[in-house]
Structure formats: structure tokens, C-alpha cells
Image (cartoon, rainbow, N blue to C red):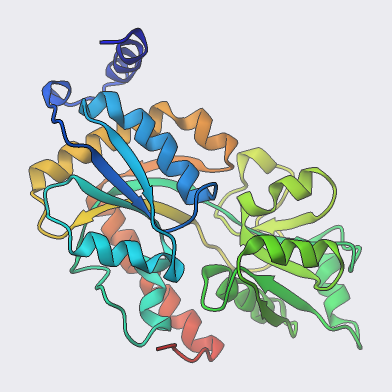
Length: 321
């Protein structure tokens, strides 16, 4: 056993995070964590941090496989049909588990019946950012600007039917402004147009706009969480800024349905230890480490799914095929 592994296990053991016998289990085959997005994004980077930390706890190779496409749906279809032995997992954001059922007429997976929740990894924030086209310093400034006669207030999102799409529409409705939506193929091109003054706002995961904010090329006016992000404590939440809209995004680890309860619990204990010992690395990604077990993750999914149903119906969005 390497010194690094001994140090990691000792630290995790001191926290009381390793169940008895976990370290003794090993196998020649790897545990795979599938990610439905390209390398370098928030989900991918989080998966790699967690995989690295889980390796010594499981005494197994833990590898990350990127299978981008169809807004992450390809991964859910792949895991759904995988053997329920706990060796094929997926790290997914909340959208495919809570939102997609309301925006696609036909999904090739059931978010409840086809998967066994292992646990929540972390909470992620979304950000509302503006650029040189408005000169707004605060969210109140932006709302005042958008209400000015003759203004064409438009926001960009990473794509139609995404979580940021509906967050932007919900913000406009609650703020009482006519906010047009422009769908982009990802957050990066939306940020380019924001900094160029073509659009007045971008709604995206916080990690997609934080560097431009720190460089002074864009201004994050608010985040969507129930509390301020520790890495941007000066930026208010929407609720702090007077707009009653709260969403704590999250990333969850799942296995195929019918994975044995003992295996689910073993994987969660390893996940919990990995998250707690990776808190600093996740924080650098503007992600809040906040592990939760299978039952809590299932409850959170159900509550959020009902919230999205209401919001999507209020938006008038027409489900896609």
C-alpha cells in the first residue's frame, strides 16, 4: 500500500467515514463512472475528483468515461441497461432526473424506476450574469434597465429545455420583466455574446461564468442557491436581491435499478468519505460538498420534479419529441 493511500485511509478513518471491511474488498475489474458531458466541464471535473478519492477506499480502479450527447441522456440509457452489480455508475446533474420528464414527450428511461440512487455528491449554484450592454452593478439595476421603454432584454442559456433556460424565464416572470430567451449550444458561446454586448444576461452554472466575473469581463448579479456561494460571498442570492426564486442544483451518483442494497450502502459510504476528504478541491470548482444518502437523494428528486412540473407548465414550453 502506497504512502498516499495509507494517508488517505487514515484521514478518512479518523473522520469515522469508512465502514468495517470496506478496505478489504478488491477486484481486478474497474468501477466505471459514466459522465454525459465532455471533459473539462463541471460534471466531468467533479467526477474525476470523486473517482480519485474513491479508489483507495474501494481498493478498486475507478475510472471516468465521458459519453457526451443528447444533453446527458445517452449515459442514462447506457446505465439503465447495465448489470446491477454496482460496477457501472453515473454522475448526473439534477436536470435529467427532475426536469427532462416534463420537456421530452418520450424518454428512453424512467428517472425513478430505472436507477438506484447511491447518494448526492454536492450542491451547485447557477448564476445570472450581465455584461457591458447594461452597465448594471446590481440585480435591481438590471431590472430597472430591462423595464426601460425601448430596451430589448434578452438572456442566453446553454440550450432550450435546460435548467438555465427555465431559471431565466422564472426570473423574468418573478421580476416582472419581458425577458426573451436565446438558446445557445453551450454556455461558452453565450458568454462570448454577453461580453460583446449582443445579449444582456446569461444564466448558466456558476462555474461557467466565475472566471469572466473575476476578470471583470462580466458581472454576476446573483446566484440561485438558498445561501451565498462561499467563493463569491459578495454576490447575493436571488432571494437576497428581492426575487423569490431559489434552486440548489446538485450532482448525484446512481447505479442501475435492482443493485443490491448492501452494494448501494457500500458505495455510499465510500462516496461520503471521498466527498468529505475532497471538500477543498470541490470548493475550488465553486461546488459545495454536501453528501446525502440514497433515501434523501430520492426525496430531493421527487420534490424538485414537482417544482419543475409547475414551472414548465407556467412557461408555456412545448415538450419536444
